[in-house]
Structure formats: structure tokens, C-alpha cells
Length: 242
Ligand SMILES: [Zn+2]
Image 1: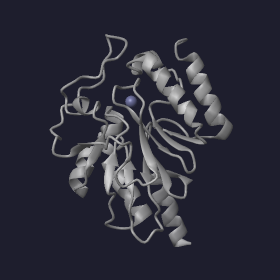
Image 2: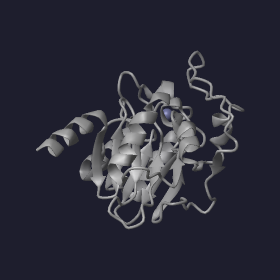
Image 3: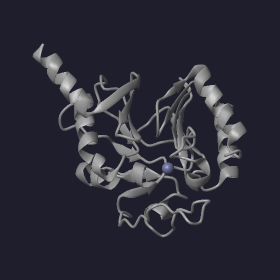
């Protein structure tokens, strides 16, 4: 009884949702991150995809230890892109755990501050990153594989940002979509947070061709089956009409 109660209390601190037996969505408030790996495997091999906000550090560490055990750590951190709500705690966590952070080659200069994210509205801009993280960040392998995530491939999906990636697992057609599949909401109008709408639409078409059964986005709830397909179609058909 007490254990159940304690579990509920700590659950309320770390809002998490299991999407499959080896994918845990961490709801960090306004943005999601994902823990990918089987918590019941003998070897605790797992990866963290995206790292929330700068202040998500404690929540992510608590979620990792709850799922995989005390003093466990992921093998690596994979970033779908470098916006402040994905990059957030990545560097502090990579320092704590002494693990690498992987990004797409085209995203790297934005993370290190050599390039600034451009919004389609020139009056708006994303916060400038200026992190001295060259020693922490590595470029993803060119062959599409993802270190420490067997069975997964990364897919370059530019549009939201130049070096944005999605992660796809063919076996169960699961797509970790980052911000490529953004549900239109008042606070997230596409024309203000998507750098290149034409590229974003092309990326959505290539995602549709994968016929994902599960879409796990950076914002909002995961989508399954028909809802996933309809959401992709909707975005493809309406991305210019905003
Ligand atoms: Zn973003």
C-alpha cells in the first residue's frame, strides 16, 4: 500500500507514459523527451531522445532512475534538433553521465552558435545558442544508423530546422517525430516556428511514405493508426494555408 502510494507520488513528479514496452514518453511540461530501451533487459542499454528545457535536468535524471534503476545512465543522447526546448539539459546531462550527444551534421552549427535559427517572420527569432560543447557533440553516422539504438534509423527531415531529424523503427513503424509533425495551435503557428515551409512539406511527404503506425511528437500526445495517418495528411494539405 505504502509502495503504491509512493509510486503515485513520484509518478506525479515525473509525468511519463509508456508508448511501447521499450519507449517511455517523458512529459516535461510543454515538451516531450523519450527514453528508448527495454528496462527489463539484462544489459541496461538505452538512449535519451531530446532533453527538454534547461531546468528539466532533475526530472530527466529521476525518470531514468525510476525506469532503469539507481545509478543507471543512457548510452547516449540523440537530439531531433537544437531548439532550446530540445537541447535544454542535453549538455549538463552529458557532463553528468559522461556520454555523447548526437545531432545531424547540418544542425551542429546552430547548436554551437555559428549559425542562428532563422524564422520565416524576420521580426522573430529563436534564442541564440552559444554553447561550448564541441567536445560533447558528435555527428550522427552517415549511414542512417543511430548509436545505441539498434533497429532504428534517423531520417533527415529539414523544414522546422535545417538539420532536423526523425527517428524511425521499421519493426513496429514507430516514428519519433520531433517538431516535424507539429499540430497547429495558436501558440505554435507554423509560419513562425518553421524555417522552410516547402522543405517541411517535402519532409512530411517522406514521413507519410513510411506509413508510421505510431507518431511520437515533441509536443502533445502520441498518435496511433488512423489518427497518425490523418494528422500527416492534414498537415501536408494545410501547411501553406496558415
Ligand atoms: Zn523546435
